[in-house]
Length: 444
Image (cartoon, helix red, strand yellow):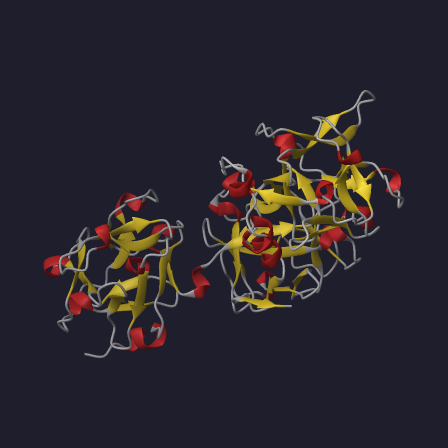
């Protein structure tokens, strides 16, 4: 029994089947037996989470080869599901509709989560079609949402995680909520994971200064965007680009579009935003931002304590951001000499704020000066100042980004090969961007 709708949505590869609440379809207990139940879980590397919609309409699990089936051929809402051998009846046949419902040919009902919940272990069942994220599914690369990060190190977010049409946008620290997760569709919509609304402009105006908002898709070109190779998020209707106004970081409810200026506040990256880590010296102490006697900030090394002043991340633009106030590591007074002192400031695009991590050497190098982060005088004393110096390949210039969750008991355990380090993986992630169609990352 061939299924025309399934033919259109069929996949030759196994992929995650993810709904818009952020979880994926999984098999309980990784069972390979007929009668195995299915439920919702976070993504893992288990083949029990990989599925394929065949050209003849079966939704097949990679682990067992069994197919998703409506239990006992129940035709009513609330019908449960399990896995079984292929039989060719309508209870096993599915189609992925253009609006991303996974619909049964048995009863026209669609796949849903029980009580439309998103928690771990939620049961899946059949429901009447309604406009809810729990019924919206993606099978394949298009299922992946990512952070839209500005050069400030903050993420594009929906104010108050609003589900309302016309909701405003803001910038927030990375929090992992669905309202911060985005994908650029092949047709150019910037779609949010929370409610599947897309980024739009409040007025169809070709002049600068128009605010952005969230709306349902309406076919207008004002909802279409390009993420250009040089990092602009450009509206196709008027050619203007999304900008974070200077000095506005948190809760900016009036993000607007303006003409390109080349300033860093107009630059964006769509991808897996890096987590905060310790910037750990080879002798075990970590970089910490402290307040000096004059009320300014200086950088020194201290034992790990978990405080926010010790947590850092390298943004896609190359800023080294501190978690305590989300400011960026910079050189005081823009000095270019050896012994230059370090501080923190908001992202301004100044060249002294850009850094490069060299994992094979352990250097954190300032791009403007070419100097590297060093512990002053090779001291092992707590509170010793960190400054910049020319490369000497000495231990007081060796650093790595280590996870706060790591708890290694020896120096040998703590110092892995640089090629296996978190920083190396993070640096590799920065070598990718999304193409203008919003598909899989491609090297640049």
